[in-house]
Amino acid sequence: METKAMPRLTEDMGNGLFATKDINVGEDVLKTNRPFVAVLDTPRLEDTCSGCFGKKQLFYGVETLKACTRCQVVKYCDRACQSKDWKFSHSLECSIYQELRPKILPNLARAVLRIVLRRVNRKYDDSEFDTFQMLETHAKEIRDTNQDQWNRILLTAKAVKEYSRSDIEEESIASFLAKLDLNTFNLVTPLYDRVGLYLHPYAAFINHSCEYNSVVGFDGDELFVKAIRPIKADEQIFISYVDTTNPYSIRRKQLSERYYFDCNCSKCQQGRDAREDRFLPTSLNTTSLDETEEKVRNLMTSANNDEDPFRSITKLKSAIRTLRETSAWPITRQPYVSLRDELIVSMLAAQQFESAFVQAVIRYIRVDPIIYRHEGHPIRQMHTWSLIKLAIHLYQGTGTGHADALFQRFQQNMGLVVWALLSQLVKDQETACIARSFRETIYSTYKEVDGEFKANGLEPAEMAVEIKSELETLGALAYEALKME
Ligand SMILES: C[S@@+](CC[C@H](N)C(=O)[O-])C[C@H]1O[C@@H](n2cnc3c(N)ncnc32)[C@H](O)[C@@H]1O
Image (cartoon, rainbow, N blue to C red; front, side):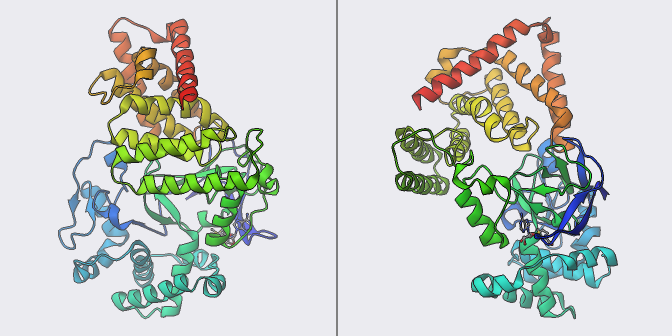
């Protein structure tokens, strides 16, 4: 593990992690490729490699996975991925998976089984295990306020004790599970697609702030925490446990239900006066705005659960219209932001590539710079990347799907748009908080596109006027599209 931070007791947040030196934006606070435990979510066992957690599939052209010939539960890109997982833990659990077949244990049960088996087989060094034991569980609060969750923990502990045939007490296994519940990170691909859960005891010391100074990401099995703001030596490292683009009441509810605390950061102290909550000047009262928000969130849930992307699009557009009709809803206030994200996903699924492009341009120009101030924010980087991929798709003209009248009206030079967006993304890399494999893909795509221009006798770096005009047209496209929304 490489770290520029050390744990220490805080006044009111239990243990926390503190910087040992000044850390610049984009630099690693912490990096490790040794999880205490990491497992895929059950549905992802089928389509994601259990060795590299999808990294090679995403960026290195791996298309088919091979199942472990013994248990048939886990799958791998190649021998290297298989051998890594075998050494880490699969050699200990494979026979148990075989016995349980066709049943597959849920992710938390598989994770705790790994911890028990690795512990019994002395795969953890003592200091690593001691750090794990120091982690908060909130077991009392779970028992007192969430009987269902507590019963689930006890039942899983009992089953894991039986499957593992270990002499670790059920009570200890239950405490491992409570630690997992509270301290695991969402294991995501380098493009932030959730595939499983990951626990690292040191990283788990990082407390939450809605005004976070760091972000967590993964590059395969490597976990990194990067500074998204300059951090001074001795300052506490904070990440966000929840989506901080949400208004105060939602953040507060999520933090108290899942993590048992009230956030006291400067943003939360502003309550409904913070940017995330604010509305445009309106004569509507708070109750009426709250009712609209609830109605729209229900519509969004219904759209998310709908398997037909065309029906989802209709529902999402109707939800957006409801927000627009209030004349009070900024496009950067939730759930407007999420509605647009979902709309882009549904439009892609429905092969409405031109319309998806228009929405992704609005997000790139009008939404992300407000809600993610730093251009190197991983979500902003990922959104820019998906806009570029869409522009490349439209540029290559390989199936634009359903035509979009507004897109057609603007007639952009997609080649130049691609180059301009890519070169901006390349410039942002110095302070970008993203995985190395993602960054390498950005560089290699830029090189390819730039090379293609040069092969055609063009030098885009010298086409500043044309590029400026294309970027202004993107702005005009976003403006017109929002007027019609
Ligand atoms: C993942 S753990 C972080 C490490 C933890 N402080 C510890 O000592 O193990 C999450 C727990 O830390 C505490 N915590 C994190 N951020 C906090 C905050 N901003 N204010 C108060 N408590 C916080 C809560 O008890 C929360 O359930």
